Amino acid sequence: MLRLTFFLFALFPFFALAQAKLDSTENTKVLIIPFEEKLFYCDIMRDLTTVNKMSKDEVYHRFRNEIQLSISAALKDSMETASFLSSDSLKHDELVNIYEVLGYDFLPVPVVEEKGENGKKKKVQEPAPKREVGVRNGQVIADRQVVERYMSAKLKSTDVLHQLHSTYGFNRFIFINQLDVKMDLSDPENAFINPMRVAAVHYSILDKDGKSIGGGLASSQFPGTENDMNHIIGANFYKLSAEVLGSLLKSEKKEALNSKTKSH
Image (cartoon, rainbow, N blue to C red; front, side, top):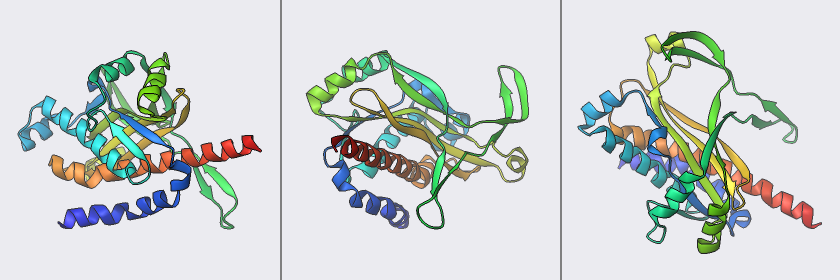
């Protein structure tokens, strides 16, 4: 009960923001596209399967389903939302058709805009470079500065989106491109003193014509000793979903302003 109360309290500011922007999203109908199995990255799988007494496949499906449900819950008070997990009308073949034309690019994580002290000026803050350590392709990587990137969706053909729009009325598509549940090695020195883990969602927001109107990397850190999936999901997925919601609302507001400008 305490965990549920905390969950609702933490989401309240985002739901309030969503409520305030309903005018710009009243005609928005969102479809959530889940990630493919090959795009689930988890380097703590042994710990998760052992502690939760689940197979690797069960762990994958639990995380895949829960992130869809969490994002759906975050969006549902602001706009009509559906996913292949929750809708009876959507067909599995339609998801397969999306995957057949789906590709990916690695793009720098978008810059963060901040208001100045006067509330008008804005400054652009670049994401801090990450320090990469570990082993990749058999080579040891130690303390190398890297620009943080996220996996962005791109479509070889937009016909599938046009069809989904024509059949169901969807005009926004949130692609959950990749889910990471892994050790946090962004700070190599602290990783040995106070090991942490991170849950992260790479996502893209496309309109019905396949135009990218938003996207990025939402992440949430949790203790390196936490292996209980219920705790990992309950303490982190609402944060990831809130970031996706904020990004979508921002893109909707921008699109509404652009449409208003063009009409004048």
